[in-house]
Image (cartoon, rainbow, N blue to C red; front, top):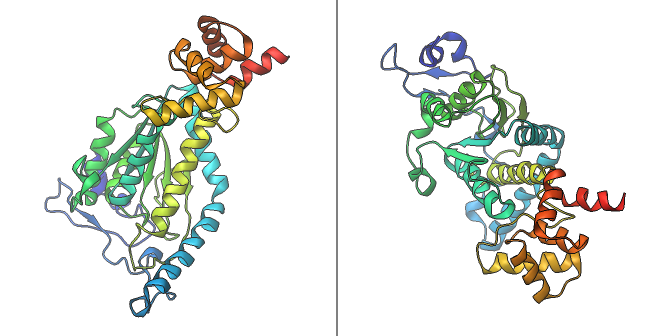
Length: 336
């Protein structure tokens, strides 16, 4: 059965546990997949604490928003076990299968995925294809709204196909309302390809009926401005994406103590940070740290091992490779 026919099939029409209607112009060509009435979704409810926000002073508005934002942290905390399970799937993909992490979303959700993905190379020296963000509507949608892009599930499937997603990869579908057709199409296609799938939403009412490996659902409640999920739901999403990639990078040896020892010295700020990290770990002064980094071809972790063990670049690199790139394992092996 083709993906298009699945979308038109009655089984797929009930793939969300919420009344769902698919409008098609042609029986063989799916058009927009829409929820006829979103009024029951929690993220579309009116917030009783902000009914009169338009009557408040500037400071009162700020305080109200801040009070609502404070609710986000407990909602995310309640999902910690599922976030940890998702992070372990990502670690396994990186270490066992040479796989990738792919974020898929529309609007704010898509932009947050792209933001998190784009920060990984400079912070952790990851390959640009290791963590990828995909947004409905393509690159243009990063900077401005592309109306209707999120309504086409077949486009989500096509974007997964274009990235050659396989069983080695992990796909995170980000949809704060839990109903975005583009994301549902992407997740469905990813699962067909045996990728691990993670569903991240902020509504208790929406759940795919096809198999998902992990569902992360921080229920942050109605937004300050009704339906504006770029606010609390967006904040929860950002926190969770931070946790997923940061945890994964720690678990694959990109961090020693709490220092980013695999950063790329792409600008003056990062070069300064690299020198300070070497100074902190080894006790070297600034000039010696700079010389160590030059001898280590800019690699902070190699520079640390060179200084700590009194060895040259080749030997330090060899020992790191033998220990999976973990500085702590190299140093502990000496102590043992």
